[in-house]
Every structure is written in structure tokens, then in C-alpha cells.
Image (cartoon, rainbow, N blue to C red; front, top):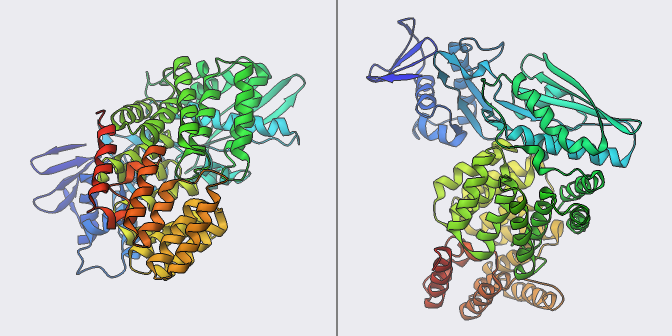
Amino acid sequence: MSEVGGIIGFGGYEVDLRACELRRNNRPVKLQNQVFRLLITFLQHRGEVLTRDQLKTQIWPSNEFIDFDNGLNTAVRKLRVVLGKPPGGRKNSSYIETVPRVGYRFIPVENGSSITERLNSVAILPFTSDAGNDDLDYLCEGLTEALIDAVSEIRGLQRVIARNSVYRFKGRDPQEAGRELGVQAVVSGTVQPAGDHVLVRAELLSTTEGLHIWGARYETPLRDMPLLPSTIASALRVRLGLRPGVGIRHGVARRATTNPEAYRLYLRGRYFWAKRPTAGCVDKAIDMFSAAVALDPAFALAHVGLADCYNTLGAWEAGVLEPAVALEKGKAAAHRALHLEPNLAEAHTSLGYCHLSYDWDWVGAEAEFKRAILLNPNYSHAHHWYSHLLVAMGRMDESLQHSLRIIELDPLDMLINSHLAWHYHMTGNYQAEVEECRKLLEMEPQFHKAHYFMGLALEQLGCAREAATWLQKSYELSGSTVMLAALGHAHAAAGDRDKGVGVLRTLQELSQKRYVSAYELGMIHVGLQEHEQALDCLERAYIERSGWMPYLATDPTLAPLRGEARFQRLLRCVSNRSNGH
């Protein structure tokens, strides 16, 4: 890809920006206006993911906009036909890559050859077993997750789909799964017992061509299973067509354990962790990770598992344990994991979360998240929580890029997708929040967070009574005090004072039995226009170290308080902490 004097060259084509002309072999290629504008937009943002909304604003001026979805689909199709496949590209390859549920990316050409000469996106599908053995089921899930981690750490791969999205395709046709996930290749495999050994078969398939690229058979004792993911990842690195010298970012095998029972317990912990927010699953995961650590105190990933569990229990989304209890444990576990293995992206992410939500040390949090992403650019949770930090810091455009990146990495995970609705809520783009919720509801009509964010958006759009209906449903589906508090606020905002007070009393009574964040009580007082009581609650939330506090400046629910001197004082206190003062 080159650009000289207003002319951009790629793969035998030239685009003359001044003459608004596409040429191939020095001959003009006819393009409609919108299709040419689409090409220019792609070239100006080559290698970047562009959302459909971004393309709309760039290509279709408001006075031309009629049917954007059909118009964009048609323009992309026409451009793909005109450009054909890149030089040296495989059958069905294209300059324009579809990123499911997000938009498109123009794949640039480097040094006269297309990036598509190698595979740069892959999904590790769930390994399966037909043995009917619970331990083998845990082993299959654990091997799948460990292999995703190992392959994610291969330099040169742009996208490795995260666990929760690939598990929707368990038992499905691999090529079909790959196409739906928008990747160029998939890895699938089986795990079977073989006496006191385990037999693992793995294969790599091309999504576009359906070709069997590579396959291997591994017979290993159970005690050596922790080493297998890095072995498979090393073989895949070559078969994915990555350039010579490209390797794995750091030794994945060092993160494992040589104790087979500790590894089995760790896999069971991850199995239960993946079932959250189902009641009791996080507690079961803690039991499994704790038992694994007891057997092998040097097992770094088991400590990360504990950190993730405790961070969840003390998070503002769940809020079932006081932050001073839960996040202190989470931070200690993350520090222990990093002492054992300084290059664990997962551990840096867990520690960054503690700095963001509990310490309010945003400088420290950013350092941890950046380190995690450097170590593993495909680790979706690092991008997720970095996006949260960027909102707290007021860097909204950067936050959006990381929000889109996590959907690119985990396109079908409901919690990951709901993060984009949260981002739009915190940045005041309520119409976009509504649209995201509609997409979530199409994926899963009973998803509690889709109802929650829809209710929040509608209230900000002036539809408080309709919002209360959505929030009531979110509470019924989740039982969450966060969603109950939002319901109380919506009732009060709609003028149903008695209902708002009723919810407030329910939460106050519940707080006598378990932890309820004072921030949530304050939200209802805001709706009731009881500003002094609301500020009392926020000051208690500050003392509690509530995970809500980093978003004081951006949470739209608190807008009526922003002119109050006490509120500004609180804001300065959080800001001083975040800047290390």
C-alpha cells in the first residue's frame, strides 16, 4: 500500500483522490458515487474496523439517506465484485472483511502481497468427547479455553474468537461456525480416554474453502495435559502461514501445573466460572480454585481464577460482597499470580480492575491494562475493562474503539455485547443505546441486561413510565439490587413517588441482611428529588469504596446533583485519588 501525490496504490489498483477515479493497469474503472466514497473511506481507515454507523455518516449525507442498510450491503457487494480477490489471495478471499455485528475492515496490501496470503483470524471450537465422563467434559472445556489462550498469544494473529462466543457452536459444523463468526479458519478436536492416557485429535480447517489444512494426534498422560495447548499452538503457528520468526509472546507452559489433580480442579473452577451469573456458580468456582492452589501454590492461573471470582463478587454489577472484603482478596490473588508469572495478561487485567474499581488509581490501572493488551492483544477482558477506565477518564473515543474490539473478539457473548450499550449510556448516546438493546433482544429476548439498558435509555429519553416496565422485567429476570434501584429511580422520575419510596424501603431492609451499595440507595433519592439524602448516600458509597464511584462524572442519573457543592467535593476526592494525590 502506497500513497504519493494524492494517489493511493494497492494490489494493481490506483485511486486518484484529486480526479476521484479508480484505475487498474492505468485504465479507469467505473464506480458509482457511493461505491467510490466507500472505497475512499476504507482506504483512509485501512486495517481499522469501521462500524455501519461510521460508514453511514461518511458515505451517505443526510439529504441522500433513504435505506442505509440495503444501500451499504449493495455498495459493499459491488465494491467486492469490482476489486476481485487480492493478488495471491485464496479462493473467495476479499479486500473487505466482514466483522460480525460490528461492520467491515479493509485489509491492506503490504509489499505487493496481500495479508490474506496468510490466515489472520481463527476460532478454536469446543473440543468434544463421547465418553460420557464428567471429568473428560471438564477436560474438554479446559483444553479449549487453554488453547484459545495459547493461540491468542501468537504474534501476527489479528483476531482469535473468545470462549463464550465459540461455545455457542459446540457440536455444530465447523465450516458453518467459522463463517458465522467471520474468521478465516477454525480449529476443532476430540478428547478420548486411552487407558491411563488421553488421546487428543486436532485439525485446522479453512472456513472459506472448506479445506483440511492440518491435523495431528496427541497421546499424553493426564499429568502432561497442561503442556499440550502450547504444543498445539506451536504447530498451528506454522500452519496458519505466519511469517518466519513469528512466535508465541511468552511461554504458555510456564503458567500451568505439573499436578494433575490441581489441573483438574482448575478446569472445574473455570467450568463453574463460565456459568455465571447462575446462582452459586462463583462460590463453586472459588472452592475449585482454592483447592487447586492448596495442591500447587505456584499455579499462577488458579490464583487468577480466585482474583476474577472475588472481583466479580465485589463489582458494582453484582455487589454481593463489600468491596473492602472482596476486592482486597481479588487484589491479593492477582499480585500472587504476577509474582509467580509476571507475563500473565489475565493477571495484569485482574489487577487493573482492582486499581480502577477499588483503589481508584487510574494511572496504575491504565498501566496494567496496557501491559495486558501488549502481552495478549486478543484478550477481550483487558479491552473490556480498559474501555471502562477510559470512560471514567473522559476519553470516550478511545473507549469506543476498545468496546468495538471486544465485540470483534467475542461477537456472540451477551455480557460483552451489553458493554456497548453501557458505553453509549455513559456517553449520552441514548438512541444508539436503544439500538444496541434491540440487537441484544434479537439474540436473547430474556437477557436481563438488554431490558436494563433499554429502561435506562428510555428514561433519559423522557419515557420514564415505559422505562419502569423494562426495568421491572430486568429485575424479575436477574434479582439484582442494581436493577431494583434503577426501577425505584424510574418510578420516582415518572411521578410514582409511593412506588419509588417502596423500592427504597425494600433495599434498606435488604441492606440489614446483606451488602447493598449506598450508591444504589442514593440513585432513588435522586429520583425523589431528595438531594441531601442522595449526597449522604454517595458519601457513604465513597467510604465503602463502591465500584460506582469512578463514574460520578459520567453517570447521567446523577445529573441533578452536579451543581451541588458536596457533589463537586466528592468528585474532587475521587479525582485526587485517581491521580495519586
